[in-house]
Image 1 (spheres, rainbow, N blue to C red):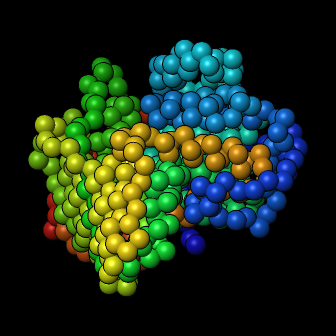
Image 2 (cartoon, rainbow, N blue to C red):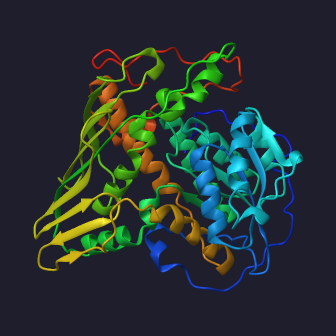
Length: 444
């Protein structure tokens, strides 16, 4: 597949030798991750049970900090040895938070020489002898960093979403294929696929517990996110990176950055991806310039080749009712979900999930548990395909809402749209602050 985005080849990365020879140990795959797994035809570089696993973190915000803690908890042989962020204060804040965790303090082994800052800091981490890299920067950088990581021979945990535009999606698909050839892991932060109760619900529905799916609905309504005031002397790139949620070239809009979790879950349980999407959305409460050019609400209707439909609604508006639920209607019954882990199937084979409150983030941990268990045991995980396609499904809805036009799957996949500037630097001109206007805005 042709990749439109120009991905610079970081110097001294692809040629880096592995720190040691990885040994392949026998073992069975994690049962809970079966549906999230893709087999590789290549020899997978694994570690023996006695090896340390050296990890590097790229992106030291809240999710990067959380992913590092998940990794440390998943395997007692993991050590954090390298860190990178665009901003020094963010890196130091993350490091201090990690060092305060007494259970893991001895495995936080990041010398000053292994702390890298700036927009090229990711290259410096990938040039070290780490085994695994955690990618948790703003999503606009994900395709570039993923491509560089696979070229450098690193196993990858990549936070969601996969990209912010179709050019990025094609890049991620190419990286996933290359990772498979090289036997490198890609574990995606779409953690519903590693939630035990979500796995069980999906298995039952796909086994016919509610018959043939006729339609589905997914809603997630929540409040807003933080805003950081502009500091004197900040360039546009510095300011927008500090407020990346509100700039489509960095976040993809909240539909992609946050709601992609729910879109992925529904695509998974419905068994595939849609042929088209017609959506609407806008800004009602976040209208000031400090909120960049993103929307605060969306509603989308997806159509599938078999005639089934999926309706999704999402919003980020303070002071409004919070809603988080799903519903599937089939020819023999229904499946209703509340929050992330509570499900009830009504029909000939009725079932209820456990008594979790729907808020516990089990998947954040189990995805890392699966990652390192498979890395040591001889299995293989590559989530790159659904990582990219579920993100593309979200992009379809954003672009339909932005333009007011129905967007097909193939149209979205083939689109030339590339929101990320080439060779970005602190003084790079950024996309102008401009809110999409349906009927006027075009999808390239």
